[in-house]
Amino acid sequence: MTTYSVTCTVQGLEPLHVALLEQAGCHVTDDRVSYDISLQTEETDNEFTERSKRWINRELSRVNALTERFFEATAFEFEPRIGNITVRPAAAWGYVPQKPPSHNGWEDEGLEFRLNAWNVASKTEDVVLRFVMLDTICESTEVNQDWADRDKWPPRFAEVRLVRNLLVHGKEEARGEVLQYLQLCTRDIQGNRFTNRHKHLELARLRAPFLSLAVWRVIIDGCVDTEVDLYADDPAPIRGIFTIDEGPYPIVNQNKNS
Image (cartoon, rainbow, N blue to C red; front, top):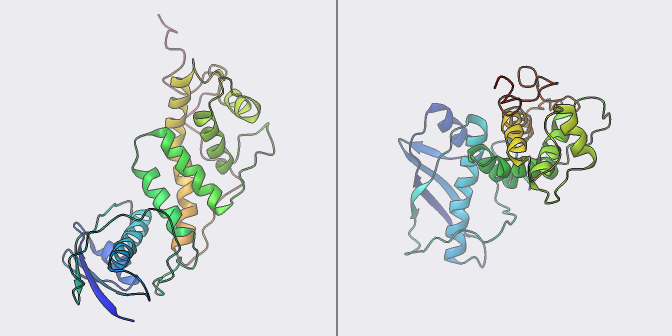
């Protein structure tokens, strides 16, 4: 089995980011990051090159989750040389057995998937896509998303699911617990997904920062060698966001003084 030294460029690294990459066995000099990776039996040059790129991108995803800084690896070089290889993005998720042993997390096969989902959720400006990704992360970790007491504000991970269902389901009228959630938020947002779409989207935008923070704790729980309190049974913060009778500003009572 041949071991290669892979070097790439990652611009903008600061001491904290360098320390996190060094936990994975990387060596960082200025903006050049090096790491060792072994060629697996019967692995083609293309497959090895793809896996080498995915290896560092996975580590950069972890850095993103821990520091909210997104980095990109470019300009890959291999020693010894493996020839002129065209890098193709992997077509599907797969389990990569070679995990860095020097930091917590990679014994969980689902963490790489969740980190990539978090990359999308934390970067996108599309609130619908954000909630799809947040709910996907919750599902993959099997946190409790039940809303048992309908007279109280739903727990944080249940609310992620409720907002996601409100935004992505195609039926005209929201029903069941999604409609109950709307009625608990405010009297002024009705359940019709077509005529009230703009209000549903604004509600999601207002809740996104608080619910994203709740899901971020799920990500961190897999990335650090300590137990993170997920507050799974508690609602995400609502103070300062809702006037319960009138709904979230600025989408209701716009003609109140007209």
